Image (cartoon, rainbow, N blue to C red; front, side):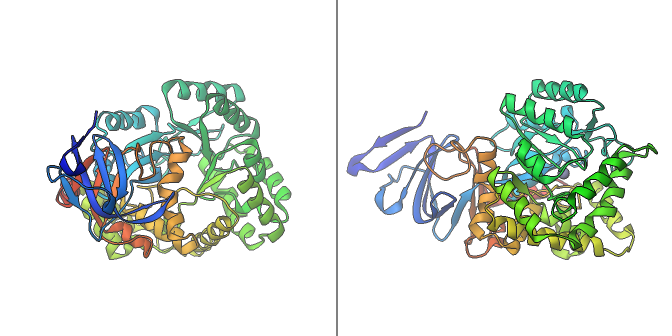
Length: 470
Ligand SMILES: [Zn+2]
């Protein structure tokens, strides 16, 4: 319970809370509001008002917000706790230190990711909120089958439609927050997933299955697409022909590994499709995605990081100091021993993705910022800020980029009545910045304090969160 006491001169006193005075508030509903007072009590924002219109009793705990900016807590909408299992326990502190107060885990073994979700639920004042999909739901020749270190067992193999149905229902009974459909599903399996999800009011994200095209997955009702993957194959003049070739290959007469089969198909169709994009077809795809509200999580920094080896830059590499020593050494070794192969194809896809993101934004398609951390040597938390920069580089305005990491994910999970904005009644997940992110999106990195569930984490505590990992 929070209580307001009206003292003499009508000054406001709040027991059980604190006031942030003279701060510049930024959210995607009202844009920038200067010189505001925010009152936080327990886990909620209970008042947001012009500082000139509210008189605070000096008995309050008052935080001076002069020349500072406050934004809603950030989401990374594409993370994997299960990809580097020995990093998982450090991911929470990294996210919080970088102002990431909520994450969406887009694939991992159920018990593993649910374990981290439970820990977060039990410690909402210090850890980010975790939404989980559980494992990727894949087809007969599933990609992430655990056959190598590159393909840890992140997925479940489902051979028939009824098996898909059974496994999806199990996941829902276990309490997943959304579902992730993967690339090797048949159209029938994919349709079944969407049908069950709709019955249960759950969102489905995924990759466009190789047996389908972007327009049909959008029309059937997928809610979001990760990595812009396979979109290029749906945007050429000969999309049908390419689809038929893939469908024959997917019969997998030679019984090769799912990961190899998928790689072969991308190899033969990805770059050639990008070179043959048909503007009429592309426009049609974008119109459908916009109309059906099929949101995109382009993970641009993942692609750019790989293609241009951004992880070799000192600023990026310095963030490895915050990782457990074992992970830091492993990543440095992997980076040093990576083959010096030609990255031309990766560069083409990275550049294409960036320009598509800009065009999609102009077409009215919505985005969520996601990184795929820790894949691609992406330090949890840090990489989200890099993704925001990429979104702006691709053509989103600074406020659209912020929206993609604040109000959009809240809407995605139907939580926008309580999260994602800075107004009365919302959960106090907030980030205080030393500079204005509407002027320069990189200012999201100039973090002065993080507030999680009302708990004020000052700069000193943030620094110790980062250094405590090792
Ligand atoms: Zn991923």
